[in-house]
Amino acid sequence: MSGMKTRKQTSSTPFIRVGPSGVHGLGAFATRDLPAQAFLGLYEGRRYTQQEIAARTWNDQLTYLFTLSNQETIDGAKGGNGTRHLNHACDPNCEAVEEYDEAGELMLKFQTLVAVDAGDELFIDYSLTADDGSTADKYPCHCGSPHCRGTMLSPAEAD
Image (cartoon, rainbow, N blue to C red):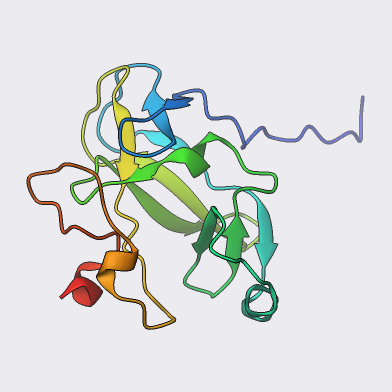
């Protein structure tokens, strides 16, 4: 056994169950009561450069793309995990946080913002940007929150 590396299991999402969502398609749900700032998992998948994303034709298909501050994009549809099913809400109970791992790679982790109960659907605020000049009505929100913006675009773009 000497010399063998044991790979730390980072893709595990034990506190997330994927199931039908009342908001949209599939959603991510807490498997147990969780406190605020509980780690839910890393957003994983194939990574693309800005140039690779621009060269692809997405044709308005359902995507699980998450662009990081370094302009790398993670496609959760390819090699991703349950975190890709966190739906949008204007009043979210979770957040995405960027961190560098030991190797210096920018990672995206999800954590709860507030305490959640087992069975609660987990949400983040997508804060999308419409690079193609699309209007807010092209990105409708169905979260039902009293503070709903009516769009998944970031608050600055929704105005």
